[in-house]
Amino acid sequence: MTPAAGAQGALDRVLVAAFLESADEGAFRRLYAAHTPRLYLSLLRLTGGREAEAEELLQETWIRAAAALPDFRWQSALRTWLYGIAINAWREAARARRDAGTCLESIAEELPAARPIADAGAGRLDLDRAVRRLPEGYREVLVLHDVEGYTHEEIASLLAISPGTSKSQLSRARSCLRRWLAPAAAREEKEKIQ
Image (cartoon, rainbow, N blue to C red; front, top):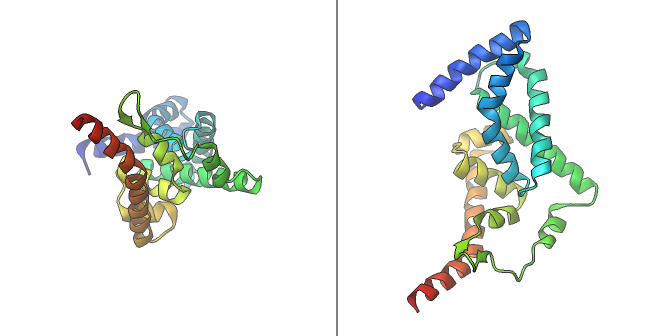
C-alpha cells in the first residue's frame, strides 16, 4: 500500500464514521469528491464512452453506497468496495440493455468495420475507440487491471470470477487490441520510413 493510499484509507474511515454517526453532509461530500473522478473515468470506459450513461451509473453507485455504508465492514478499501458497486450497476444496466434488444453486438455494428482505428490526420492510435470495441468482460478486466491497477485477485473478488479467468480475459483483450492496432501502427511506421 502506498503512503497516499494509506492516508486516503484513514481519511475514508474518519469520513464514513462522521457520515454514519450524524449524517454529516460535509463528510459525504468529501468522500464523493475523493472517489468520484476515478469512478467516473472507469465507468466512462466501461460504457464505451457514453457520458450520460456513465453519469447515471455514477449517481446510482453513490445512492447504493450511501444506503449500504452502515453494513460496510472494511474488509477491503472503500475505493475497492465502491468499484464493486459501480461494476454491479454497470452490469445490471448492460443486462437491461441486452434484454431491451440493444446488445453489445448492435453497439459494435455502429462502429464502421472498414474504418481504420488510427487517426490518420493526427498520426495517433485511437486506443479509446479500440477499447470500446472489446466485449464487456474483456473491457472490464482491462480497465480494472491496466488502467486502475487492480491485481487479478482483486479483480476476481470484484467480478466474482477466478483469478485465472481474469488473467485469460486480460490476455485476450490485449491480443484483440494488438490485432486491431497493429495494422495502423505498421502503416504509421512505414510512413515514417518513406
